[in-house]
Image 1 (tube, one colour):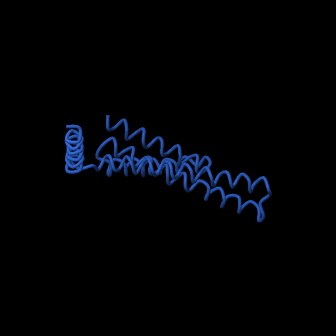
Image 2 (cartoon, rainbow, N blue to C red; image 1 turned 120 degrees about the vertical axis):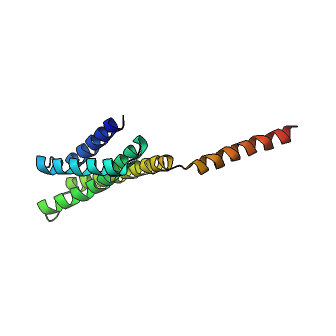
Image 3 (cartoon, helix red, strand yellow; image 1 turned 45 degrees about the vertical axis):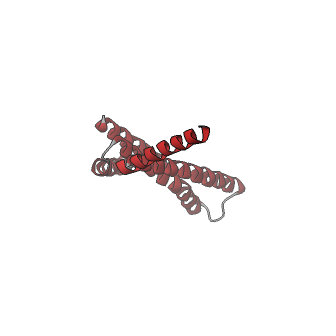
Length: 139
């Protein structure tokens, strides 16, 4: 199961990388596949961590996408047209929206994956205390 999730996480980030660099050459994408696959194999200890790192990579790719588009547009023309500026604005808004979404999702997955048994015991104790307090008020 872990191997399947490693492969899928690597595939997802590699497709994002390929889209980010507008159809990058095969050897560059293959290098990215090896790098991200090796990183996930080394760093992720559970399926949750695989997807936490994958969504974090998607967040970084989503943040880099409008930056890459601005650099690409700047190299084509010195002063962009009104339509190009509109496209750049929508790229920036969407890129920031999706980067915040994926990074927040990754934060939640990391928090869930790295929860310690002490954290769970404290939350169980707090839930039990709340139930007892409610019973005393009713009685």
